[in-house]
Image (cartoon, rainbow, N blue to C red; front, side, top):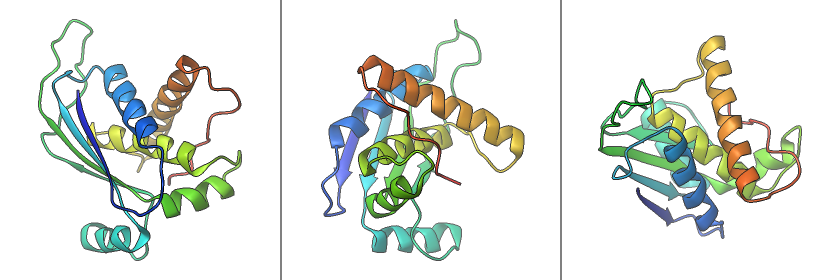
Length: 165
């Protein structure tokens, strides 16, 4: 799995954790090991520009996903996953910091960025949360991936509750 993490935000973030959880999420979703992903961490101003340009919405947001090859998890366990370019995930630590503090189970900016990374991966794989059933499926999968990753690393305490809308 080729995953690049590029921090352009000026904020210190746990880039290794972002890389690790992205790799874990893609493996868990059975994405081809030669697929490629880019994660870019930007400041609030850059995120706001992207949010306006691509979503026509004001203000910065927490995460944006830009799919490339529209890869999907294989439908059956014995299917060979396709290889390709997943796309880009853009994260904003300033928004993540705020969301972590305001969450039902308060957590750190880095924990929020880990959650947002998984959220972005799922969007790249075609998951969405516009409809209630889609939201239940996506957020359930997101929680399972984050919980599994945390358990493998022996991290204790409650996992961050979804704060993305």
